[in-house]
Structures are given as C-alpha cells and as structure tokens.
Length: 62
Image 1 (tube, rainbow, N blue to C red):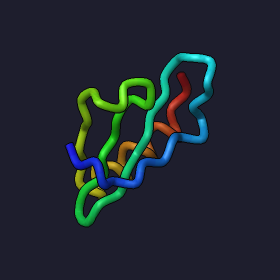
Image 2: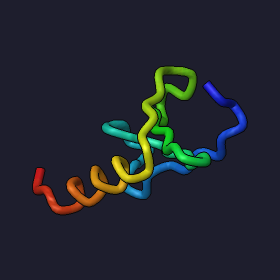
Image 3: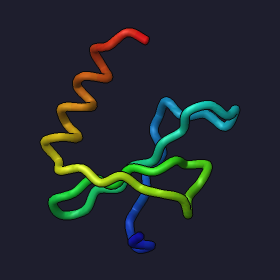
Image 4: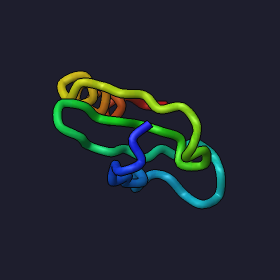
C-alpha cells in the first residue's frame, strides 16, 4: 500500500454508512479503497479499465 497517494472520496459517499469509496490516481494506475477501512485492501486498475467501469456504473440503474 502506498501511503503517499492522494485519496479523493466519492461525491456519492456520505458519512451515514453504506458504500463509500475513495480513489487515488497514480501514473498508469487508479487505486480504489473503502473509505471506512483506509488500512484495508485496495484494488488497482489500469486507467482504461477504470474509465470503462465508471461509464458502465453511470449508465446502470441499481
């Protein structure tokens, strides 16, 4: 885990629980973690894969 990453909390995350994520952009990789478990596991995606996921999520009704 890279402690020097600059994490940004999702604008859809609230302080009322539920699904909360943070992302950090690094050269050639996008890191994702649970904002409530900052020392927990992280996912890492290539930028194109992350962009495809974000587009899919934005266009999918839950």
